[in-house]
Length: 161
Length: 125
Image 1 (cartoon, rainbow over the protein chains, first blue to last red):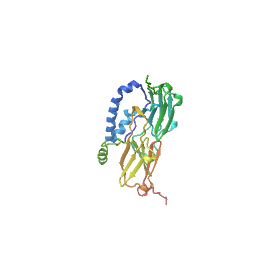
Image 2: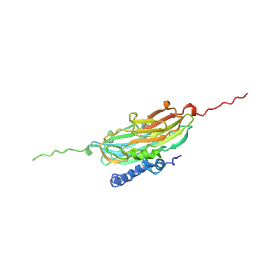
Image 3: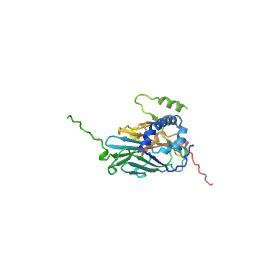
Image 4: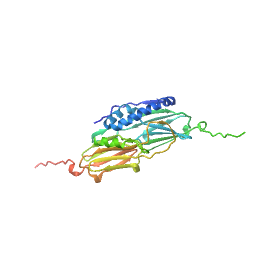
């Protein structure tokens, strides 16, 4: 039986330069790890209970031109269990998944567990915090961050003189 | 071991296939049922397939893919979830039930009456 190691709250501060520089290396490493996890079920649970959980919740950030869109995997969390703070150039994400083990059951396997998280992201462009919206659906948090007027891409017409 | 071999062959990457991910699960048991709880973020009822044959339980989820723009940071990829388990005899197949709550699957596998422990009352004469 795999049991959970005690967790503590972690803050992971990322600046955009850091991401740029280390992104490809991490990506490479992560892919290898993923492959490894898939090959070894037992190990997977144990590992994720340990260090791999530091990056919870896993987060993607996209740029669609007008907005930045942040998505995070938060299975089991409802809107009440997630707190978001948004400024012009940063997003803070905190939350907690409470233990959901049923009472009076014996345990055969426990890979999921409860976790507390706190992450913050520095954004590459200025956004308008007033217009930011967030939804959580099927365990995926989606935060839409409209870019501020000065960050919007502009089309400049080229005139023949 | 059979499960392992199978997964490896299915993992071969082809054109248009997404990587397979193993959802993390908890498995519990009491005298009435086995309970499987699986984290499958992004999966809706329509994307979920649960197969239970004589001895194997297969959970599959294929969440829809959205185009949200150019990725600036990527910690997770669109995946197909799949995991299989060997299920003991004595599950009441007709009463298996499943629900999805916030991207978490709760799968109840009730035991058939024959395998449930019975309490025999001792009467005083």
